[in-house]
Image 1: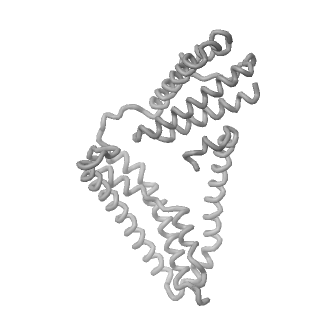
Image 2 (image 1 turned 45 degrees about the horizontal axis):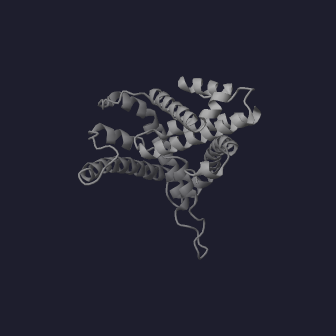
Image 3 (image 1 turned 135 degrees about the horizontal axis):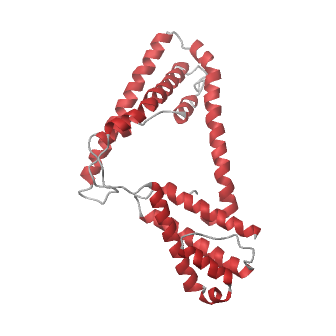
Length: 277
């Protein structure tokens, strides 16, 4: 549904949806941690014969196992990719070296998802008896989250600075990629305007102004002189730009999808401006 939201949602729905879902996500994250905090005294009181020190020890041990397991899986993914590149086309066939998988493994901080999984354990079994060691599982999960957030989260910036990744000749910054796509997007819009609306382009000064703006890689939807026909033309161009962006995102696997999303949100805002002109 997310990939096809441009087919069945209006620009207003998409624009409002971003704000709504970000707010809901923030509230839900806060509620989960607040609930576990309120429930923690009851959890520690019901450890079923396991001492506090032993429960903490279990949590530390499982945390170490999770961190080591994630690091090993990161190296395993690299090995599989290096082998697979001999038979199929992979997204990036270069060898990332020893450092990159280690840092990827170190970034595996645990959070709300782990907590939600632990909280989903039923309180009672099918025969009505209490689920064995449920409180211990919840306590261990809390320890794992706490340790990974504090230890891995706080040391990650230092680790990244210390590692000094190899330079893969990818000097293009995210901002430069964004501006490049914006320029290509404007050129695509200008081409579509000249190809399909050449007659209107000669008759309406506002369309000529739009063409001039696109030649300088900007969009326009704030001219009070824009007629109904011009709005129709501009709306069609926005749809063409949106299709071009989605196609570009599907074809270029190494492209940061967040940059595409920024441009799509910008087009939605441009379309919304038409309702107030």
